[in-house]
Image 1 (cartoon, one colour):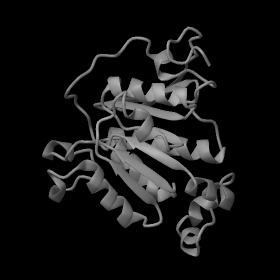
Image 2 (cartoon, rainbow, N blue to C red; image 1 turned 90 degrees about the horizontal axis):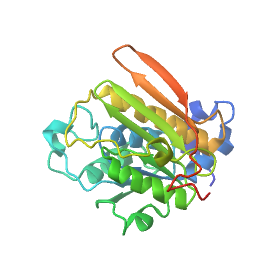
Image 3 (cartoon, helix red, strand yellow; image 1 turned 60 degrees about the vertical axis):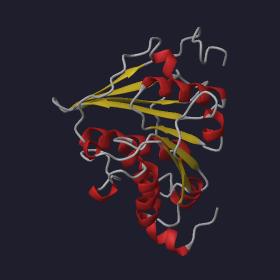
Image 4 (cartoon, rainbow, N blue to C red; image 1 turned 90 degrees about the vertical axis):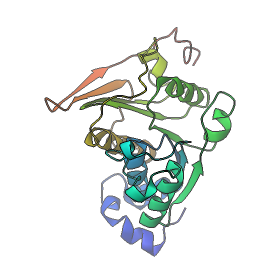
Length: 245
């Protein structure tokens, strides 16, 4: 997909990055990214995906903004309380970058609809706050060989990895047992913002081929100590989700 003069000017600084260039920017324009969950992670992730010039962004969230969301879910402004998160986010993203196509799916992902909802996405970004849906998305990505950029946060802590089915472990390899779910948990808004930015960097790397994605590696962050750590993680040949690949 050719870039317009406006797009060449808009993305000038990242086109300058070795390994991206005009060809890499055109690849970004040709890529569809699904952001599952328009919350603490999904709001800033979608913002930077649009700023980076991913051509099509699908926002998936059935929820509406509440006042208690606004410390971290940056597409929700005071005036947006009660509005559908995905629709309010689309408004902000389109105002930021009208050259990006933004679609919304204001539904809950289920086993029955996941393939239809995510079917046209090239990359899936994890903006979720529950493991049940994460594992559902993980299964879709394994079945269709799509990259899944996982992140999870709590308070001043977080983790992330990039799933490339067949090349590294899937989410079920890393977490063979379902982690405990929590309806409400503490979170500082800057923590998901940090990980959302890292997720977008991973997405850019996957599309353009620059750098080394977090495939087979799990990144941990301790914000209290301001400490990052990366550990290697391996595929489980007996994984019930990806063992057949």
